[in-house]
Image (cartoon, rainbow, N blue to C red; front, top):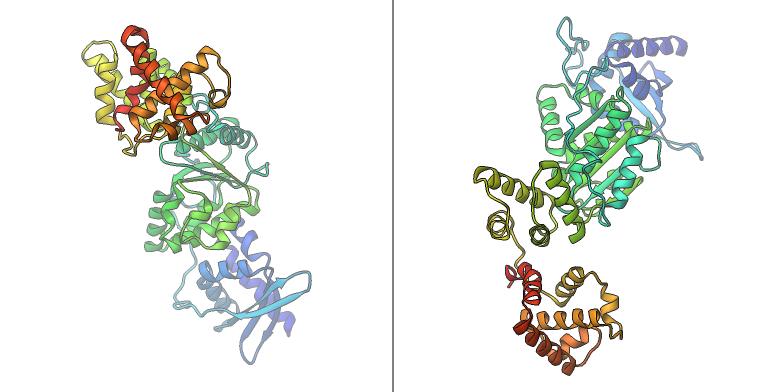
Length: 469
């Protein structure tokens, strides 16, 4: 008798197979093992290899399974799962399926002669990767703040899904280049492997697509489409923090792709541990690959980015103007590019050269400058960058002329732009006493009276401070 019930179960699987993709069937239904059937209670017991598969079947295929069981057994069948909770110790747990409404009225899922939609993944279709082809590794300028993410990203693009960097989770503040980097990975991967299904999607668009799929009762098509990808790139995933249903759905997509060795790349403005509202089961998956931080670019990288953009756009900007823009753009790549674009527009429309006066006008309107007061560290960093020396050398006991000048300028600017007493300034700049600070300030003031080049030099350093007073 059980043999007959096994045959009915096999027929049930046959009906299910006709209504899902081959990939979906292999992933979710092939692992199910027939255990027994209780004729008096009309209860079917099947074994599934993990609680996760049970959760997925119950969330997305309970109506399909109920319909197939009713058709095959010619009666409403109560389904019970035997979950393998510990393979090593052979521990299992029996869980009853939740009854699904409208099983009898359900019809097989077919599209007839209708054209397949973009989310229909029964037969993989040509896919628009939604990548910005202008954002490549060639114009993603490398610096200290992005060297690790850029290097790993290039490695992933050349060998997607083959490294231990899966998933690749990138985080950093707005404007640091996250979107550029993840696009560059996708563009390079698609160029190297044209047949791979690569998709870039913003978290917001993913959520809109999911909401539409729920409303139109096409959730399975939505999930099947995303599960058919080879490389999935999702930007700004922090936007899902207050959307538990979207996160649950992404969890199943993530797990499926991860188990099949497909590459997943995620970008956020914060690290995984700071993603409020995300369940631990998803956070642990985010952190099992590589987490890389993109920091705001430092002054030198900002200068390199500006010079690169000027070369591409055919715009000539004096070095002192480049330096000024780099100092005042708050380490935002977007702000840097925005300022250059506006300078380009002004130079074309008015047929004029780009100078400091024009740059100051653009910066004032285009860049929001931080309002916090200057610190000794801010002043030291900028003075050292200007003269090309390290703070370690400034703090040393060396009496080399160039280092003495850097100390004196730093002390003078610290007294001018901060409210600290001379003793505190001296302590923070190499452990000098207050008399050294006073002497340094007097020396700088005397030189400013007689050395015009020195006046211009200090004006260049101070220019970025003025908006912060």
